[in-house]
View 1 (cartoon, one colour):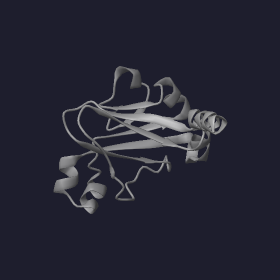
View 2 (view 1 turned 90 degrees about the horizontal axis):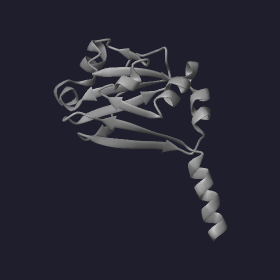
View 3 (view 1 turned 45 degrees about the vertical axis):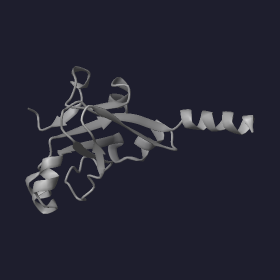
View 4 (view 1 turned 135 degrees about the vertical axis):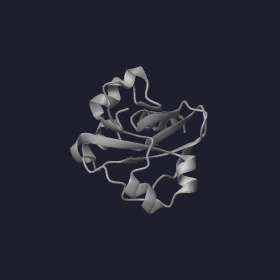
Length: 135
């Protein structure tokens, strides 16, 4: 039994893991898309909720580099949207008006440079990450 547990621990260490942090006083929603450079909002996928001042931990049973290799152009897009927007607008309005707070377009190298942690609002460590809108 101990051998099985130790081998599972090795598997967990090799999985795709990262954090998404909400450093605001507001509840946020986010989703991740692997279709970059296509950044249109095509799906009503803002199902990941992050409460204020907290961290959402994500992981899959894949190595981190494998996940990026499967993405189009080795880039993932992270979209953030406010709870108020989700509550006050229908999906067509959100999509057509692009009512997002921020989108980060992150390559594997970018991700490594920020220690696999996406933060909203962006930190100084994220200054080289491609972002939209550029305010």
